[in-house]
Image 1: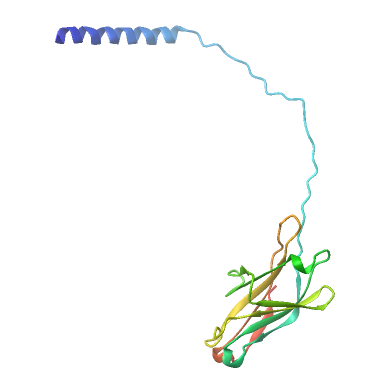
Image 2: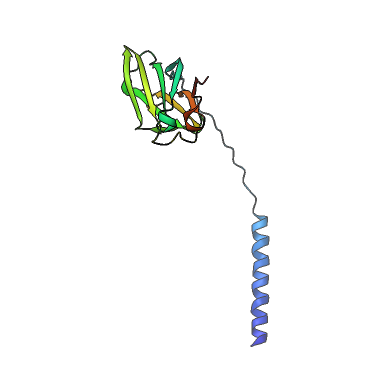
Length: 168
């Protein structure tokens, strides 16, 4: 039985070697490929810049009684061609940390195209002092949004020394 297996293994080895020799002796045919396409297209591309609202200096911080209910007030103007409904609001502890908000602000019309927005902090949020950044952007009909026009305001402990500034 062992002899039979050895002969079978030898036969398989010989057949494998013959198959490799046969494959190596077949000439490889070369192919020539041409990648030519005589069609072409042209197009015109353009970009759009979505202008941000313009904040007017000065902004104001009202710390409330002992910093218990701080608010930041900014006056701003919509860019030409935009309406108040396209405005989006944001707030955070820094300009980089601003997130879109849907509450805690009130916008009123000062004159056509000019607005005043009061961003309110939470009750007791200013007792220990600190700062907040607020921003306003506009959304184009394509869905693209402008960068935020922003301001940063705050105060010291218990609402002492309130400050506010428009960010560049």
